[in-house]
Image (cartoon, rainbow, N blue to C red; front, top):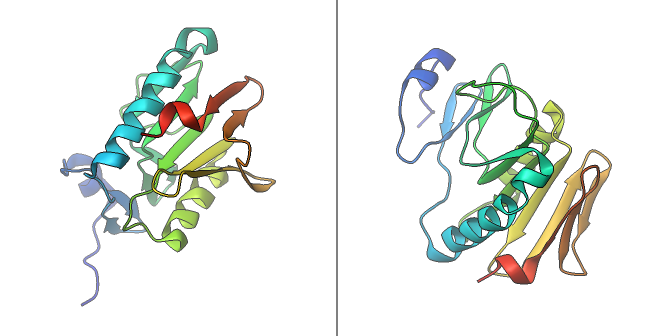
Length: 167
């Protein structure tokens, strides 16, 4: 059965529970609700919140981001440097978006999300698999596995050891 198309206006005025991504008129469910995913997300937020003031950043969970005129993504966590706007839907590229994998996530769909983030100007996308205890750092230059167990950014520097955020 073909997907029912929804307008951007309808998506923006509707509350979905849980919220969903919007891709070219199609609503895409996000895989949520499992304890390991939720706990990993919570620990990441706690780690980043401790750096919030030093970074001059806003750390936010499950925030709608307009990555293009017809696409909205909702990362598990994002970091916005020098936030100056009270916009309800973020339209300026965050510095960092973090996605935590769930067992039902498909890598092809996750890679599409990562391309959307990087395409809008997000400098870093961290992809964390709490089940395999692995993580990757994505930038416009490519992806690297965090083989030493630390996710990093530069300018500003963030170094998040996986051991501190994986249950």
